[in-house]
Amino acid sequence: MIQGVLFDLFETLISEWRNGKREKGHMFHEIGLNEELFKKEWHKRLDKRMDGTFSNYRSVLIDILRAQNMPIDLKVLDAAQKQRERVKSLPFEQINEEIIGCLSELKRQGIKVGLISNCTPEEISAWEACTLSQYFDDVIFSYKVKCAKPNPEIYLMACKNLKVEPEKVIFIGDGGSNELFGAEQVGMIPYQATWFLSEKLFSQTLLLFKVVLTNNYLLKFATFIILLRKELQTP
Image 1 (cartoon, rainbow, N blue to C red):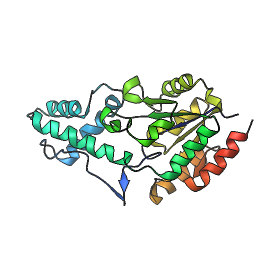
Image 2: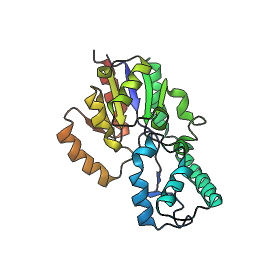
Image 3: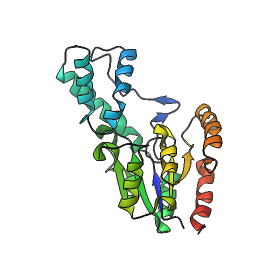
Image 4: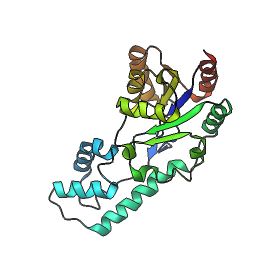
């Protein structure tokens, strides 16, 4: 019997995309960097951003500027921090009613519900005030636990917190950070959340996960709750 369901956050429960666009969250021009250089330096620091090595967005910018031997304007960096927090809070303002319905159904059935998100402090500053937060028995943010998906440790940590066995847990995510592979490696049942994916991304992941994860279902949210109920009823 399924004991718990673990969710990813971004592009699974909430989305940063609106009408095919993602609002600008960086002020690279304002701090003196061109877009190409900024992206290169930003991605170079991905692991340290996710595991909490950097305390916030501002500290990442300082590190990038120092590496480039560029001047640091703290007022501009403070403005960049506030802009980042504002943009990252937008997805939390409107939660899809079907997602709330799914979480409510899980709670009604007595299923443990957890969250594992690779994120930084400014990305989830709006979490506590968000409608979603009340539905979770346990929440793990990578920067707080110094560990990120797909490291097996973070999945096992969630299971320990919820007091459930990995083999009796469903993990649901859009697939970023190789999170579905990580979930499968520890014995969980991985589902790919495709409701926020573009058709292009959906077709690409469809080919990938049909081959690699033979037990993985690629689901639109309209059909997800029906199949999930069947999974929950399986001994």
